[in-house]
Amino acid sequence: MLRKGPSWKSSTYRETPRDLFGRSGLRRHAGVFHLWALGVGAVISGDFFGWNFGLVSGGFGGLIAALGIMTVLYVCLCFSLAEMSPALPHAGGAYSFARTALGPWSGYVTGLAENIEYIFTPAVIVVGIGGYLGAAFGTSPRWAPIWWLACYLLFLVLNVLGVEISFRVSATVTLFALAVLLVFSLLALPHFDLRRWALENRGWLPHGARGIFTCLPFALWVYLGIEQLPLAAEETHQPARSMPHGILLALLTLIIFAFAVLILNSGIAPGAAAIGRSNEPLFLGFRTIFGNGLQTRILALVACTGLIASFHAIMYAFGRQIYSLARAGYFPPVLAVTHSSRKTPCRALLAGSLLGFGTACFIQYLPQHSPAAGVLLNMAVFGAVLAYIFQMLSFIVLRIRHAAIDRPFLSPFGISAALVAIAISGATLIALFLNPDYRPGAWGALVWFGCGLIYFAVYARHRLILSPEEEFALRQAQRIKAPEPLGDMR
Image (tube, rainbow, N blue to C red):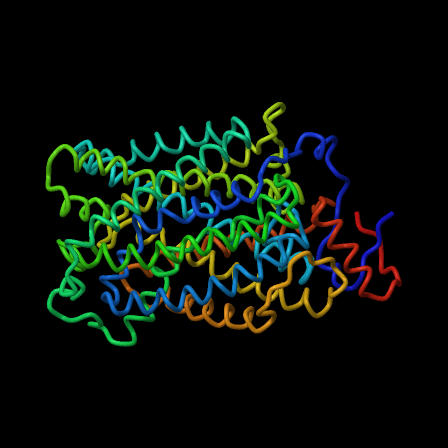
């Protein structure tokens, strides 16, 4: 019979549903290259679409400064994740870190925040895909939801077919997307003009320091998603070696391309002002290079590969993230059941797809002046930065209270990096509510988050399941607390 200590008072466990773990296994396949491709692929769409809205909010100067700040955030975050992920190699990722360090409530809050991020990020990306496909085929904006639905259906099937196919598709499309960005960067150089950075003759920093602050969510977008890699821990061969290498190599790749795209795409015609209002900024750049002919439409399709890479990779992420929380009882356990032969979280993938597509359609048809993609982007960033804060708090507590955990990799920056990441994440969370054009997204995410907390408080916390993450957390809690039992966990 299981016992609990003082920190377990607020939650209880029930008997594991019959054969749940037998029907919810995953298959190991990934190595360093697969993780690198998954990490880069999850983020690369940020270089094709989304970042450019920051040009309107803060001008080129505000956005480039914000990108520098976000680079510091992600260096601190990724080194901390590179330490935690091989030490706690569970499919729960951020949830499992917070659960072990801070208890069930914090584990759920972190998991719910990441759930918001992973549901809304592909919704943002699919809006961008619709924009590029509409530009390539000359379809009306009213067709956009049809493109979105087609993308969700196609990549839902690819993710359900198997982890081998998921990683193969991710690697192939990611390499192609990087090639597109490299070609664009080289061809854009002859067309580059510093004067294009000015926002409608108002200079590089039209809104002063406040512009830097309001640009933080859009600068974060070019890195958002790399933190999903720990979710692949149970599908990775040798996570102790592969996880740190995969995370840090992916980050280095993303830093290089983030600065190249921001500087060059903003510095060629039609200029920062027009780029900042577009749903297909790279397409505008290719049109400057090649003109308006058929080849430019073809290049719009080619440019779509970056969005497709991220869309596929983030679908992989929300499938595993919903699966892990359902396996532990935080979400309905029925969502943890995997495909009988493919061993993929098919029900979690379907649930996440329906939520993302439905939200994108809902926001698209709301009466508003700001683009649906910008609103959705702010919702995704809300979940991300909240999850970052809890992950870094978890890192600090794990370092102090769980020093005995085996750590195959140690972050050279330690607790100091975690504190820096918390400060920048907190500032970004505040910035989400300062831009009136996109503030509805932040409030919408807050409402979603509140509903999730009510569900856990009223129902789920009384029906948790001893999944691998929960058992690991319980063992760690018993090691650092006095052994006296305080009651049964049912």
